[in-house]
Amino acid sequence: QQLFSPTNNEEKVEEEEAKDELHARKLKVANNLSRRDPEILQINIGLYCNQACSHCHVESSPRRKEAMTNEIARRCAHLLASSPNVHTLDITGGAPELNPAFRELVKCARAARGPDSLTIIDRCNLTVLHEPGQEDLVEFLVKHQVNIVASLPCYSAKNVDKQRGAGVFERSISALLMLNEAGYGNPNTKHKIDLVYNPGGAFLPPDQTMLESKYKEELLDNFGIVFNQLFTMTNMPIKRFADFLLRKGELTTYMELLVQNFNLNTVDSLMCRNTISVNYDGKVFDCDFNQQLGFGIGAEKDDMTSSTSVTAQKHLTHDDSGGKSVFDVETLSELQKHDITFDNHCFGCTAGEGSS
Image (cartoon, rainbow, N blue to C red; front, side, top):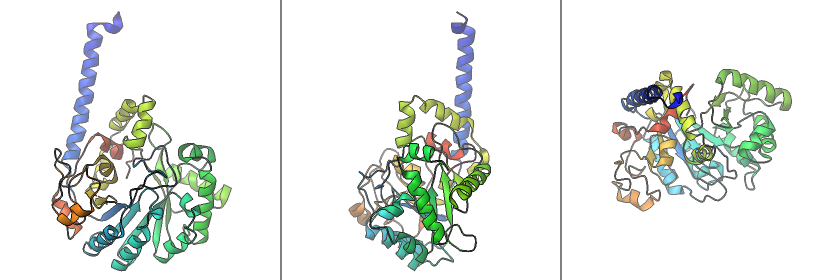
């Protein structure tokens, strides 16, 4: 009887109202943020991947066929040439290296901007190095001075294979050894390789500095592998990971965890403030996560299908997002005037130590 007393019901209502108020205050902080002149161009070059990971927020798999064309890749390189404030090209997917336009994009970007003014990053799943036709991939990356950010969610085979598929850990270790042999991770070379940790469930990553030390110790002692840095990434409650949480009945709890661990210190460095994200079809977004939800830059919330350029209409296929495309602007700085779109999933980038 006490559990259903008016007093306890009132307390529960007050508790829920307090949570809603806290949630609203935090969203207000986000909605007051402005976009800076873009410094990073992140391109999702396609959704095909040789893996199908449980945490993947873009739902990549070997069944996905969406891919960037060479023409759009060259347009992105054109924007790099006309946007000198951009210092980093971040290429992701899918497995970006398996996209037909990957090498065209890298070559055009490097031709437009040398290594002193532009850092190129390949978001690599490591196992791609063992795919047919990729025998010269390491040589290509070294030649064009491409840094690598590689996914390795743990330093143990059991945890990696559980999240990414049977045999992935063994092939990842083999790939890391190949990259080390080519100079990646060696402090005496310019070839950087950073690793990425993703939690295996509905929890936040541990302290990044401490986990990096453990990764370096385990990988060096057990395999002789070296790398530059470790980044811990919070899993975003969208797409495949959201489905995973929903099936386990943990989606609401996970969202509460993200909100409760809101860290104001992460706000200044949120990726949406200095990054432009481009989809494989050329549409532009605040970040990779808004891209997957169809929140296009310059799109009206009630009209997500328009584009101001006839040229853009010719190329666009991701027609649920609306907004601008790479064919609508001559420089990425033109996008600075557009507001950033925020929603509940944004708490994934502000929880704990943040994410990107």
